[in-house]
Length: 198
Ligand code: VGL
Ligand code: ZN
Image 1 (cartoon, helix red, strand yellow):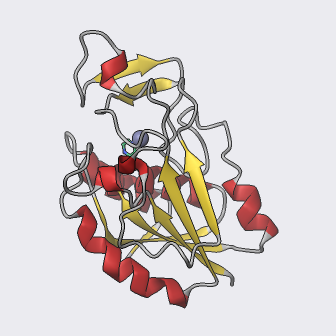
Image 2 (tube, rainbow, N blue to C red):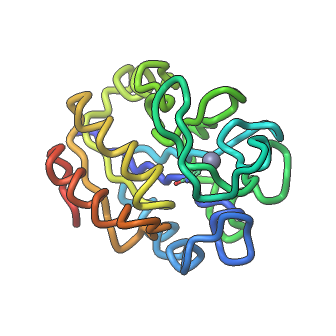
């Protein structure tokens, strides 16, 4: 077994004070750092959007954050502007140990489509390249931590399980946004997909 730790979106905008702050998002940083040494590989993901990204409520006249819209690829929650490429909000939390990262994977950089999952954009077909990276390194087991439990961690974990990786989500090292029951739905969905919740 070659086991990778995948740290999802531990960025300023998802931490208290950020544009799309997840409650207690900063509290997972120190224990995630401490966990890194136990893995064969450490991968960080970074939500990375152009300023006119279609997931931003600000680009849809009359819409407000947390509203749902229909996109060509399916329903999409509209968010406050966040993780704009090159901005301070898009930087990793300053206490996150980025020196141990073998790979930093950016996602969500195409204006027309969001990408919650580290594996596929929200059309569920456009790959990010992460699957090929993991397979070519012989990595078959993944532990996921980070932000947010019910969006990017959830989508990444379910896709990874569907692709045949052995997947654990360390829920104590994740925090959720929880819009309209999304946290409970995500936990159920991950279990059904065969993800181990630890
Ligand atoms: C995320 C909403 C929008 C996440 C990213 O990292 O979970 N959530 N963009
Ligand atoms: Zn985003």
